[in-house]
Length: 71
Image (cartoon, rainbow, N blue to C red):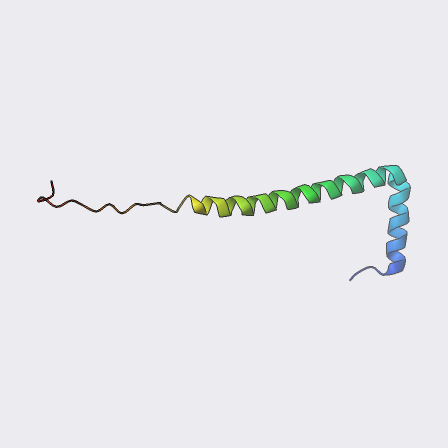
């Protein structure tokens, strides 16, 4: 069962008393930075995957074989 709005306010007041406003702000900033870093690394990982697929492509050149008469 989800807590209602009144319970959430009580929990917020208790957390604010325990940690203080400045420390709570720092924790929020650190959490936001961690989420941004995670999203960035996930995006870079998917781009690397696309680039890796290009390595599977083999470039080839068709060379016409000379017959014995031409040699």
